[in-house]
Amino acid sequence: MQCISYSEFGPSSKVLRFGELQTPEPEDGEVLVKLHFSGVNPSDAKARAGNRPGVLKPQFDTIIPNSDGSGEITKIGKGVDKKRLGQKVWVWNGQWQRPHGTASQFIALPSEQAILIPKTMSFETGACLGIPGLTAAQCTLGDGSLKGKTILISGGAGSVGNLSIQLAKWSGARVIATGSSTGFDRIKNAGADYVFGYSDPQLEQKILDISPSGIDRVIEVEFGNNINLFPKIMKPYSVLSVYGSAKNMVPILPFGQYLYKGIKISIELIYILPELPRLRAIKNLHDAHFDKALKTGIDTIYDLSECAIAHDKSLTPGRAGAILLSTN
Image 1 (cartoon, rainbow, N blue to C red):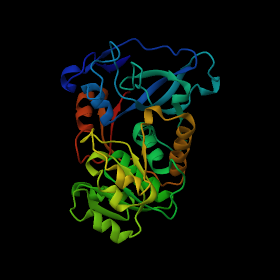
Image 2 (tube, helix red, strand yellow):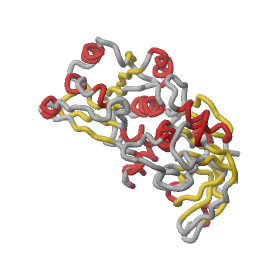
Image 3 (cartoon, rainbow, N blue to C red):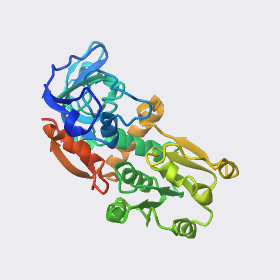
């Protein structure tokens, strides 16, 4: 099978190789998926570059990158229901703690990691639902409905932030979102009620002008950079749902300010999300799709051989949606 692989950390153009590896066989409880698309996320590019905290060398001798994707089940391992053969699926955690991800023509993985695609959903959309979709669903709706609540979503033009806006509006929330000015149109098109620049010096006051009693829930991509803002704008016993802090990985927490608001900090890492909340997140994504409330914008679809370009593109600010590889 054709695939992309690497054996050492480094720049995409130097370490990613396009070539052939043996097509895997599904083991007990696994399915073999003929991939149509591979989703490329910033986390995939960071993992390949060796930028995960505490990771000094690749976990496996040869790694096929990328965790998200979509395709069709062409073979099943022992113990898998025969009805799964031929199913169209989207996959999650393809390369988490495993050597072979989705930048390939085929992937073998546990059956539960191949989610049946709704009949009205495209392969392209399915390939966007792994890391960004599940993260957005858990951060936004992990504690239930947001009907009647006011929430703040940072990074509203990014993949997770944009899906979070859509899910929050679908759930009945009033949404304030932040981003850079180049992403304002994308944020507004997702349904945000108010849009502000993330570096606006008047951001705190503008938020409180809209919701004087404070914010019910915050979905945050840069926790460290904004750590001092939240106690000033959040309601007592509100929830701060965090999925990133790349620009400041060792922030200093003003604990007293958080304590006397009773703010709950919920850090979400979708790779290790337990089964029940994961199933709820999948259901929410599918239900929002059925209600035509969820659109996964796509910036660019690259050929499999262009994976290095796709990895670099995934890290570029201001892109207008997901980055995919066509694996056919």
